[in-house]
Length: 148
Image 1: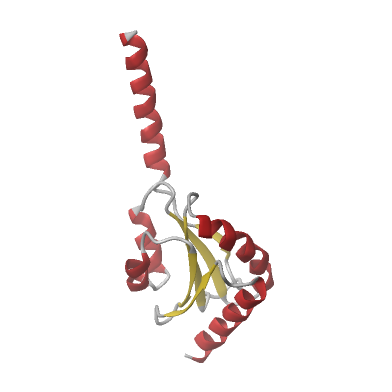
Image 2: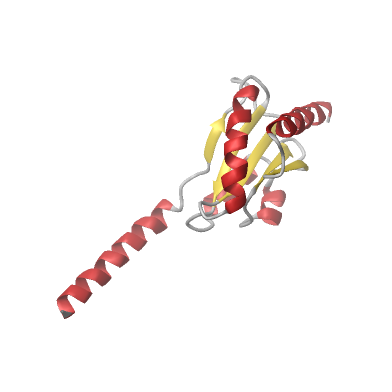
């Protein structure tokens, strides 16, 4: 019986280690915007598998993303299901919104529309947005960003 407990404990430690190392993965990029140009807007979704708001937001957003394939916007996702990987902050800094990332880190259930040049949050999409309201907010964010 002790051997079985030891084997079980060892399996748990190994699985935990695998999950820990997997949690350090980079954010998922859904759309890289216009090829050859840096995006003017970054749409950063903060999510996790246990977030009920995310289960409503993400499918709506997934249907809207194809409408912006040729636009200067990049969609990325910070998935906190397995924790808060330090690499996420590095990615946010690379995309020009380190301060906004620090403000919202760990929260879930929203997408920030961020001006890549200034790092300012232009708008926040939530589960309460319809697909048409998401399209309008994203188009407005691109317009605002282009004017700055």
